[in-house]
Image 1 (cartoon, helix red, strand yellow):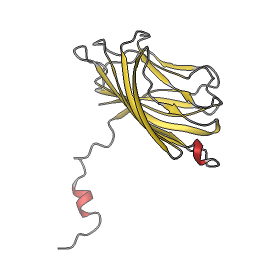
Image 2 (cartoon, one colour; image 1 turned 30 degrees about the horizontal axis):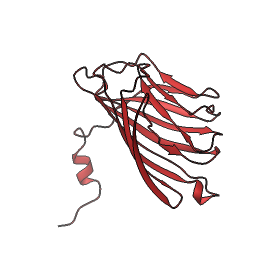
Image 3 (tube, rainbow, N blue to C red; image 1 turned 45 degrees about the vertical axis):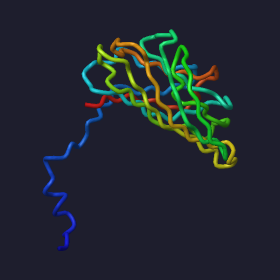
Image 4 (tube, rainbow, N blue to C red; image 1 turned 120 degrees about the horizontal axis):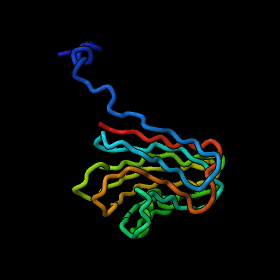
Length: 183
């Protein structure tokens, strides 16, 4: 049996979900050490933040928190590859280490990635977060990094705001954070 290109795909028309991602907001900071999405509607199943950011700080951590909560209700663990090293870890702290240890001075080479927040509007369970991100310096193999992380916000409150913060050095011009709702 041979397949004719386009026949199968055209027979699926009407059954495909063309997009279940809905843009809520985009922030393009040119300074400041944090980005906050507030007044997040509770009309989606999950949230996703897609980002590409620049900062001059070397070896920084990027932290995520919800609803302004700075308690120790966050737990995170990660695995990362940095140059030729591979390592992992975990921590409980006042915010979630969603990006782990992003390496290298990156005012030219952005760190890019995705943060998924599962069941963010639920009021009956804790919130699960997963991230995938990386940075490639292109000129220094030891300054490239890939991070896989997941975490937990130990609260049953619905998430209405999300903050992403650096370890103290400002986001640079060219940074973009976009929040999507996923149906």
